[in-house]
Length: 148
Image 1 (cartoon, rainbow, N blue to C red):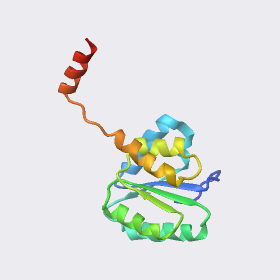
Image 2 (tube, one colour; image 1 turned 30 degrees about the horizontal axis):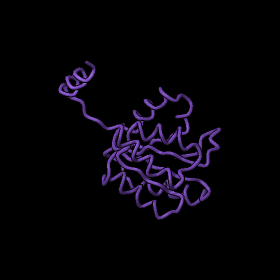
Image 3 (cartoon, helix red, strand yellow; image 1 turned 90 degrees about the horizontal axis):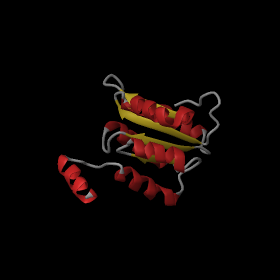
């Protein structure tokens, strides 16, 4: 995660995942919010890579830029990517989410443009969870019955 040309944000968002999930999620987000997604960084862990290499790389940046807020959006709680990112919470300016989905990323980009204030953390999680639903044929039948 390096500072890109024109990236003056004090918040650095990184979607971190096993495989290509992070890149795919960023692409999907960009279809909705356009250039707002340009400041999102991705880290994709492949079988030949060590998550510790990523940790060492990003840790150097965190030490050099304590004024930045680093937000890591990891694919799965307890996975190697999440475990390594969680270790970075030793720094005051690091926040790590797990179970990342589009709702969380969109809400973070659109509702928290600068930093994630304490009161927003719970709301971000609640909104992300509310976006996970299950619908079956029975639900369609119930909805149709309610309309009449």
